[in-house]
Length: 308
Ligand code: CP
Image (cartoon, rainbow, N blue to C red):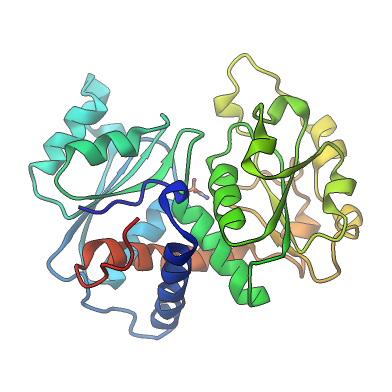
C-alpha cells in the first residue's frame, strides 16, 4: 500500500503531479453536482487524536465527493479513553478492512508507525511537530493558482516555527519547488539548526517581510509549550504580529496566508486576515481539492506515477 507520510518523501515531480490533479478536483468541487465515483466501494476512516476543524472536515468532504464510504472515528468517546493504545486502536479499525486511514496524532512518527502495521493506505493529517503534508500541498496549490508558479517566489513564514508541522512541511515543499524561504520568529521558537533546512532566518518581522511575495503567519501553539517560553500576547503582537502597516514592507500584491486556526490580535490583525491580500478562505477551499487528489493518487492502481 502507498502512503502519504510527509513531504520529505516526495519529489518535485510527485508534488507537481498532485497539484495538477488537485486543480482538476477544484473544477469538480465548483460544480453544482460535486460527486464522482472514483473511490466508490472504498472505505475511508478518519482517526483524529487531536482537535481539528479544517483538516478533518475537508478529508470527510473529499472522500464523499469521490464516492468513498467515510467514517469519522470519534476518539474522545472511543476506548482510547479506557487506555487502548494507538496501535491497538488502529489494528482494531484495520480488522474492519478500510482502504484509507487518515491519522492525526500528537506524536511525531505516529502515521509512519501505523503505516507499518495496517493493510491500507495511511495519510498523515498532522503528527506532532513533524509534518502536515496535505497542508503544505494546499498552501502550494493556493500560491500556484494565484501566482502561476512557485519557483523563485520569496515566501516568509512567521511565528512559532519550533512547534509547527505546517512550517516543516512547507519548508520542504517550497524548497523542492524552487522558492526562496525565510523564517521569522523569536529565538526561543526556532528549532536549532533550522538553517540546515535551507531557510534564511530573521528576528525582525520588517526585515523578513521586505519584498516578500507570500507571507504565512502561524499560531503560537501554547498546547505544545508546557513549561517553556510563553510570550505575552501584547508583547508578541508588538514584535511579530502582522498588521496593515507592517504588511507594507512586503510586495504590494503579496499574498497573506494562515493555515488556521487563527488567533486574531495575537499573530495577525483582523484588518489583514479579512483584507484584500488575504487568501485564507482560498486555502480552505484548496484543502478539499488537495485531499481529493491525494486520496485518488494513493487508492487507484492506475496512478502508479504518484508513488510517495
Ligand atoms: N490547518 C489545520 O490543520 O487546521 P485544523 O487543525 O483545524 O485541521
